[in-house]
Every structure is written in structure tokens, then in C-alpha cells.
Length: 162
Image 1 (cartoon, rainbow, N blue to C red):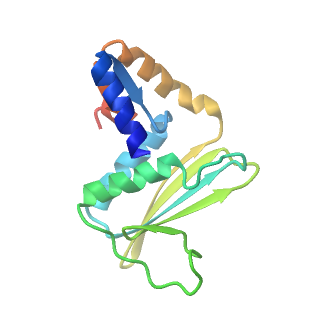
Image 2: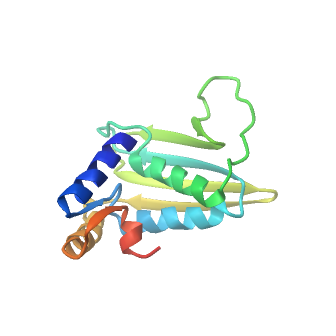
């Protein structure tokens, strides 16, 4: 929650230590969010679909929420409101014009796509994690950087200088 993040940030400051809080350690996922930010400046209609294993408790995922927040920040205004739906929440949860859909099924690990739409075209940015080993390069990057870090860093995108 924002309150918990603020508390962690204060701990880093008070204790003069480095803390890196990363919602996702998969470098491909970090790049996906960055590319969605870039596209958000130019395309005003978007939806996010995140798919995870059936044991995942949160919905939408933290990565989906960070993606939406990053897209809104990059855009500087709300996205186009989707058309009215006849069945409440049938088209996902709406966040300032961005619909977020969550799927939980056996056989999945972690997948997310951001779909942008405009007249006569769509753009899909997708990340798929098929094995947890995809998180290790991000974990190793955070471990390497934490010894040189003072204060609070939210997200590996800062370490990658995106």
C-alpha cells in the first residue's frame, strides 16, 4: 500500500541505509512497463491483461498496478473511457480509463500484456515468464546495487536508468 511504501522509505532515511523495493524482478517486465509508458504518450486507449497461476492471491497484480500508474503518469491525463458495459465489471476493473483484467489459472506462471488501440491499429506489448529463473538477473542487479545505495529506490527501472 502507499502507506507501507512511505513507511519503508522513512526507514531508509531514518537509518541512513539503502532499500530497493521492486514490484517485479524480471527485466523483461521492467522493459514492458517502460515501453507502455512511451506508448501512453501517443495512444489514448489501453487495456491491461495480467495472467498468473491459480495460487496468486492479489488481483490485479502489483505489476499491473505499477504499469497502470506509470502509464497514467507518462500520459499526464486519463485515458479514453471505454464504452459503457451492460454487466458490471464484465470488462475488468477501470483505472482512469484503463481496464485491467486478471486471470488466475493452473498452468500459468506470470504473464502481462498491455494493448493500445487507435483508429485502424492496435499495439500489444507483452511479457511472459515461463520459469522463475527469469527473476534472477533482476535480483542479482539489486544485490549488486544495494551496497552503493543510500535511501529508498522504488523499482528496478531506476537501476536500469529507464
